[in-house]
Length: 503
Ligand code: CA
Image (tube, rainbow, N blue to C red; front, side, top):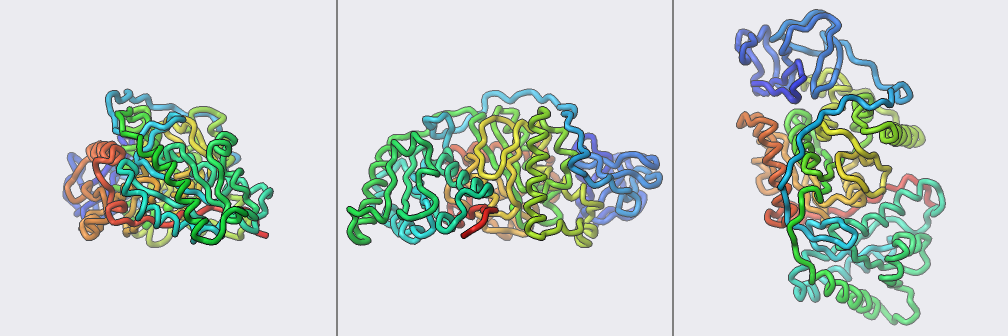
């Protein structure tokens, strides 16, 4: 069998493990030659020079005539030109109108600022790495001694990091880690209550990661406070402060919220050749449904989308958004250049053997998780989402660096696609892990939450699995279904993106 990702595609992807045999049929198309799994079959007669379309996008041009049922590969497709950012027109492309979805809800925790949490968590932030070990002990004691008294609070999370001491605090790039820490505090799952443990002599003053209002409402606890004698008094002071906030958080209850309050962050890691065939396209379908329901879905990972820039820019809802997208991609190009990193030759021989014809096709496999809706905003690393709809949050692709920035962006549900398998998990937000193949999903039956490999093993339609995933998101957001990472307590450390200098 084959899979056609987008209705405009004139190629399909072979999903039979043994490939397609010459003389077999796909509907009314006669297969002309053997075609290996993961490779493309032409679904139409293509004249020389005609566009080869996959993911609804031109990935190249037929270098000769290609009959329907033939193998479409590196040898008969001339690549589309690599995108030069300054050459990309900023005019919005045609936007597909989809009917809004009405009536979908989940049970969430409504916050003062209007956002909605999918968990009710006490977060304790920190202004400097020096206090990390102390904070970890404080959190451990709160969990053991206080949390049992507050049945409506789900968890206590310490926001620890490697920043704050010896940093060039006013260097332009320092704004990224600073605003990341600031916006993590405002993640909807932390109920608009903030508590910060500081040391006292750090460069990063705790006030810089709080708004003025927050600074007034929640005084910061400094370990170097002259009134605190010895470690036990410091820990007790932190626990007293936590106790007051737990009382506030414990009064909160889930209430019915429209699906438009979802803020779903999407990422992939530990990818394989199915990531662009099953996992990311299923996530893209779910993203379309979230946006049609009025909610927010966002994708990230600049290095993964860079080569599809010319296909993403026309999806920007207006010129300003297009300019912001170009700006973020250029910023990252410069960041990589400054570090002496070149964007290594793509795709790799392994990619080609797996059926990827060129770099544009590879990038499209990654951006498939963005679905098909217009991009209504673009955010720099560490910024918080302010609009609803599909958005791009510029981050590195590195898994936990990206996830940390996505928490700062305000996600309340996280979708993570993996092919080779990763135990990825974050304490602040439920992470729905999506296996791209049924082999992994079955082998890691208690680590993977959703098997997108059923596209192949059970011949499920993308649309159907997109709906299944959308419904799972609502269940997880409501606290009715626990994700594997939470069940197993797999919560990795956050990882702050700091492109700025240390002193
Ligand atoms: Ca990643």
